[in-house]
Length: 134
Image (cartoon, rainbow, N blue to C red; front, side):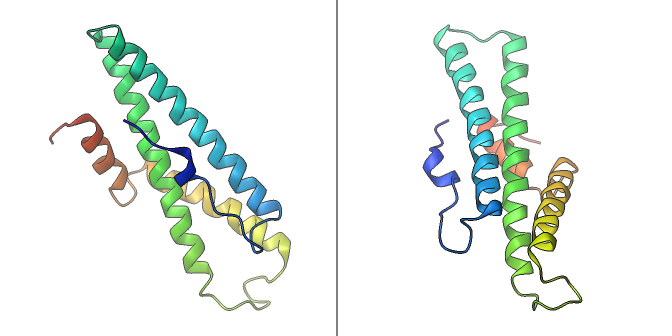
């Protein structure tokens, strides 16, 4: 399994270079570090020959966690794009504080959605990476 961090990092432009952009980069960097750590453990176990049942269980758990996190990130991106279609006015909040609150709310909402099954993307990714059949 090889995933390059370059594709996971958001592109910086004039609209996301502030607090939210820095927060997103930090979150993506943490996710990439966790993914790299899981990848190192998988490679280390593969180099040692046969994986023990505990190593297989840990590998499957790491892959499941990474796939859920990836689905949460994709859902958050989807929510962000949907909110761009909502006109800015006082009804939905049009200040920076509300934007930050909404971003944090969407992050937690999409994490919960992904953990509870989401749209099924994490399960599909997990099956593809572990070659399991339901």
